Image 1 (cartoon, rainbow, N blue to C red):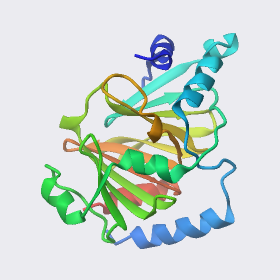
Image 2 (image 1 turned 90 degrees about the horizontal axis):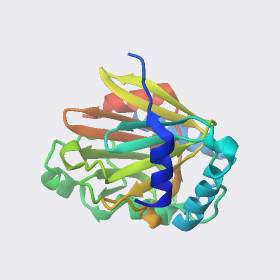
Image 3 (image 1 turned 120 degrees about the vertical axis):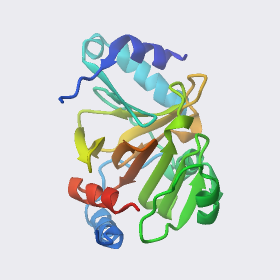
Image 4 (image 1 turned 60 degrees about the horizontal axis):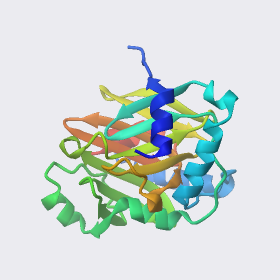
Length: 243
């Protein structure tokens, strides 16, 4: 376990949360123009893990930061950590994304080898990948210009020590939502960090990146994840359109 993991473990605690037509093309059409007209204030970047960890550890060393509330949510092989601030970083996003996605395959291979029923949108993805945890990724667009990501991970393959960690600042809204009866979380607003942590508790440094809006939920032994630039209603519509 590295210094960041130990620090988060000491400061964190579980957050107690109180108790179709084809919409893909419509949502994708909304996403592309909105990105052009309303650029994000932060760039999508490739993070050097040492830089990220050093900046976060430095933040943790500040007394005011140590007194802040660190909350941790866990769902679908993902851990969402709410922090006071994110470090400023620079780099390229496409390479980090492909490192997370894994090996490129065909959609036929995904259907045949996934070991679970792969759910799909009516529109076929531009690329399909399989990750280390057996995650099937559908990419709409290109790694350097993503319009939508759809991820499906079999929960039987999820190791509590091997997960996708998200670091969300106060500028990122984290909302519990109902996805057709399944509990989910929606992250919107400012981009948040995504870091893949391996079974040894180490950050897979080439996977660290900033992510946009994300909806994650679990159903029938599979964790689902949507990532794009969408509203709450658009995200839920996309989730419902998976068949």
